[in-house]
Image (cartoon, rainbow, N blue to C red; front, side):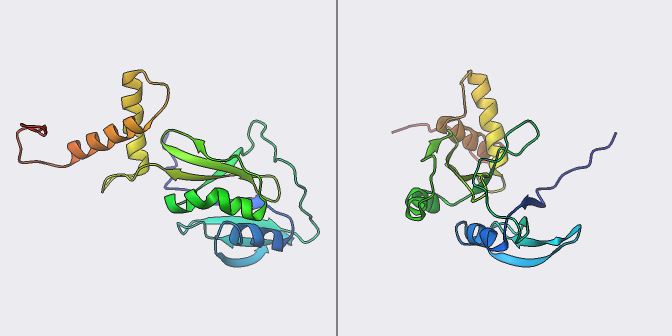
Amino acid sequence: MRKLQSQGVHHMTLVGAGRQTSIDFWEGVLGMPFIFEQPNLDKASESHLYFDPGDGRLITVFTDESRTPVKRRTPTDIGCVHHIAFSVSRVTFLQAVARLDERGIKHSGVKDRGFMDSIYFEDPLGLLIELASYRFEPPAGFTHADVLMEAHRIRVARGDYNIAELHLADAIQALVERSRETLSESRTPKNPY
């Protein structure tokens, strides 16, 4: 059977409360421009808000002015969304704790994930949000996924528990060595200092 090949996330649609709650959070807290709004074409009583998370893809929210925010953690049962992670620059990440504290938003503090750092907090409706910042930039011509796949191979071959910075550095070196030619007979130094 042939696959239905994915080429990226097109959008995610969330069920929101009132319109302003969504605008205040998605644009006011996370800085996602509110780019357009129209009726929910499947339910006329709802509005459909569209936000740009930074890569031109979309986060959309169905809103209804008769719904009010109920602050409780969204379900994490089988088949439910556990959290949504958004990529932030390193400089933004380094200020995230202070900025969340300024707003009185409870958060996890910085979590070390080996290949990235994370901070978790809930949106006004109880959905867990993650701010994620990679600890590396992939070499030209490669993606973060390419580096992570290579780092995974290295980690497994070494019998290590999880991906760490050493695996990332070695993965980047391996990708560069495989993809870039050299005039040298060997890439190792003849007279290291």
